[in-house]
Amino acid sequence: MRYSLENPRSYLGSNIIGTFNVMEAARRLQVSHLLMASTSSVYGANIEMPFAETQKADTPLTIYAATKKANEVMAHSYAYLWNLPRTMFRFFTVYGPRGRPDMTLLKFVDAIFENRPIDIYNNGKMYRDFTYVEDLASGTLPSGEYWKLRQSEAA
Image (cartoon, rainbow, N blue to C red):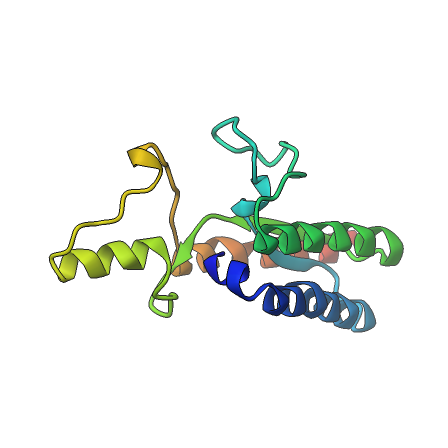
């Protein structure tokens, strides 16, 4: 998200145009069900915790979050217009071996290894969920198999 403040055009290009291109390809290739990545950042200014997928997500606080919310809305339109079922996952702070060094978790680890103080955000009153990339993949990939199975049962 920090990079989106410095370079918002890159997020518009990759998230809006890139997602549009993926949805267009899925439509042309007649994909049976599209699995897409969004972000917990779309919850934005919501203060009710924990977040629930039934909550409104109309108050994104960053360009990054706004582009991901726009992706969700575009995917909804595609599902309606082109009968392209989709599932949108709102991931929470994904980290792993190829993580960006500006991410909070990696900054914490670096600080620990370098014996530096850890940056504390929001006076220590901030809570954050982290998701390891392999856990995310092991939960997401079976969703694709589930939809393939449902599609074959319907045929």
